Length: 430
Figure 1: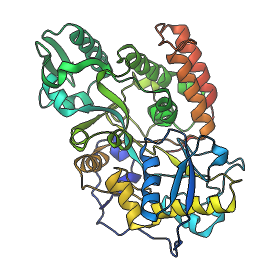
Figure 2 (figure 1 turned 60 degrees about the horizontal axis):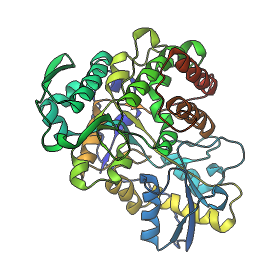
Figure 3 (figure 1 turned 90 degrees about the vertical axis):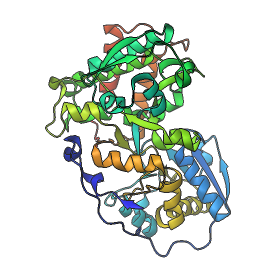
Figure 4 (figure 1 turned 180 degrees about the vertical axis):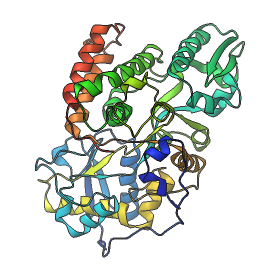
């Protein structure tokens, strides 16, 4: 188990500096934790049951002999798994009102003031590719040059690869200033390749909105306004258009898949997860888009995002038994050795208090990447995240549910207007 001292660094990481790790330490433990687990727990999971956060709660139930039920109505739940922290509107239990939960919040460095939710942990977010497939396409040294590719190189690569998939033939592409030649024909793992980008499910889009907008918000700086947001949003629009234009149909094989490592690896065989390599969510940013001195174009373009994929919250109006059951689940994850192992070892998360496991290939890769460079995920409340998700859905899909084909200036301005309304002067923090 490793404690990642580099998690608190932003500017240094973006400049490509690596922070040495502190010596391994034991996980702080809230004491006394409940000795008797409740017998039943109902959970509402906004993104469904096939996520790392949902699996973490399942680990708790299995370890403690708790009857776990996933419900479709948040009003029936004792514990709620959300993509972002809910607003402080009185609808959610204030964790600071309970001594044990306050101690858990302190572990996540969220003590002080009202705390409506706690993060399940953090995970790398970006595009993910099978390293073996990339090697068949481009050779053994392509990953680092893909990570360092300019927007023009990235865009041209997607366009060229789409043409190659339709009609394979040797074609040259430049990535990070290095020239590669695509093979003469499909073979091996590339034989099933049908598109550049995977098609994210609608629920995925809604539950990963804060991570997707990280680059925009970091580029805009502390003052989110129309003036600071327009430029970065134009860059994100280009990225969304590129992804949507070169995406796979449902069930087809794509080269890149966007998401959190913890969530994607959950549905993979171990050998598949071991081959995953991270690539940044590249946007068409230019120097004039930056209203910050903390981040530069290299950092915003070349590094994956490191963010919380989900948050744990307890409804304020949950019954006493449900509240106790939910609190026990949170405390088990936050304060027990078994809970930490579930988060870091089994689910490839970095714990809320900054420990991680290098016991697996993807776990070790994540630790190395955090030490090399990341973009720190921003915090949005649920209402802002939902407004952004709605704007994205309206951009990517027509009213009949078909994929958008019109990526005109008018479409960009309509989307941008909705996004700015959601973000203008919004309190967003890394």
